[in-house]
Length: 502
Ligand SMILES: [Zn+2]
View: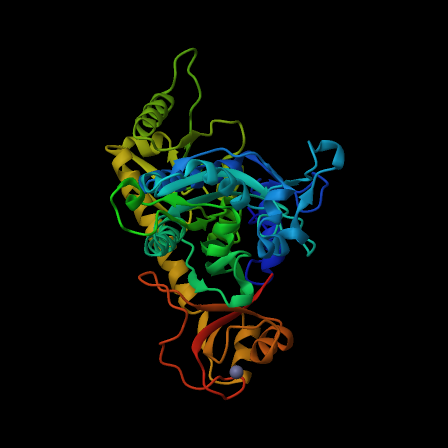
């Protein structure tokens, strides 16, 4: 039998085409909705995203965050309170038609919800006892992207979580920024298998209204940098614009001579985007047979293909009874399992479930049962092994853990090879052409389109991603051992990273 051609083009030859094809063939999205930048996410994609949400939400609750649901519309007045925020977001906002508004305010479809949460935080935060206030919502946000869109990578609607936290002190808020970076590492990196660099953004690229921003940059197979969750320390200017304040402990003690009776809280926000992380998961792990999904995220972790499952009269065959029993055992251990007893040919079933990225295909037939075994095809390494029919849930769980470790190790190895040190302009140019992230000594992160930043952004059409914000402490690059700026030769102040992006 001739090998079925799965993709028109190999992932390594043309990532972009492969990506479009896999979304359709694995039934992740459907692009035929007919509105630019808005995609339909099909059940298979939705189930992966749903697992991502559950992992993230449970982590947020474990770190003291409460869920909330805020309206999708935000009155224009909220935006106008803080000038840099409105300037930063105004071009991207979808405004509702005048007929839809109530009162004098125009209404925006939320591009992000700081200005919705802070309005209410002004009412909810009264005293130091209300702090910290940590809340999140699971929602979709809308941004009117004018550039070319890419499904799940750059869309006009995306599906994310935004957490908004308020603290009594700057120290507590900065600790939260570090917790957010750690959460990205523990979930997106360690569980989803997507490595990243935590980057403190240059001044011109921080969140509108933030004192500073730490983004997480990952990379796609074509060498383009993809921005994953960002966390921000919100500026005090923003906080004051919303008139947020709280009564201090001193205000509760009548005899207290402490002067400060009220203080302004410190705010942070964090935005892990499930739909975009799905793009990274697909791109990072997928191959020329289809999706390769981490065991933890796969909608079905095991698919059982019975052989010789025919009924004998009204009585089930031996194979049929064993399949039913195995399915029940796996389900009772919370393993997502599907029995494919459709009348498709075995080859078709294999092809279909490999495309879908199911980690384990279990084949059960009379031949296997004679030895008290089942066959397991392992999707990522494409190997078939025999395992004992006894203790199958335990076996699957162990193999599943190994599966995810393998995916992570492969992704980490690939990512390490993607970052190169450059000591001249030519090396940066060559590195970018080779699809690498370039690291080099740099003189300034203050101004966009000026001096050395202009060279990187205009001449090389790359992006200055920022300086490394380590997981244990946010650094702005100062204090690093650096030599001379590789662009202008003047004294460097930091090592920066630069890469191509969509
Ligand atoms: Zn320079």
